[in-house]
Image (cartoon, rainbow over all chains, first blue to last red):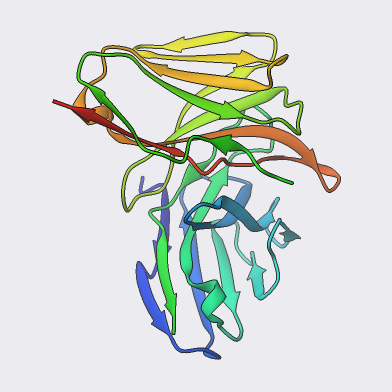
Length: 114
Length: 114
């Protein structure tokens, strides 16, 4: 049981390049989330999904797209990377949106946009 | 402002003492609040959930309080150990943009000195 895994662990992009971050979970969780974490800003929700085939915007969705084609995977895309997207990205999952449900986080992807 | 305030300065305490971390959520009235631990280079890990009617919750050496009047949660680690050194994040569950979400504070870095 690997929990939540993220690929890649680290990436350097040039401004304007695109990339996709992959999140996978093996806990059969319905809900998945993408956050970014920046110094002094805390974790901010980018997009989330309440089930296979669904996505919704979070707090800071601009410049990102997501897809949830399979229940276990949640992809985060950057179509045209900008230096402001330099951050650490965390994926998380939870079984439900119950208020008592905890989120399980992946190890993070460090992205540097030059 | 969607700001959850935690002391941004690191907290250094001596091993064996009690560490107390503060989380202020002035603009919200959450019914649930979670605390997470985050080690360097890793994703957050859930520690405790407290409900608004609980006032206090304990788990081993951890204790969390929930003061709905002061709009503050305190996180205590008794008999602290160097292994407790980490960043601790609070996350109240708030109603934003038509849905409930857990939003995260910036975290407080705790260092327990041997």
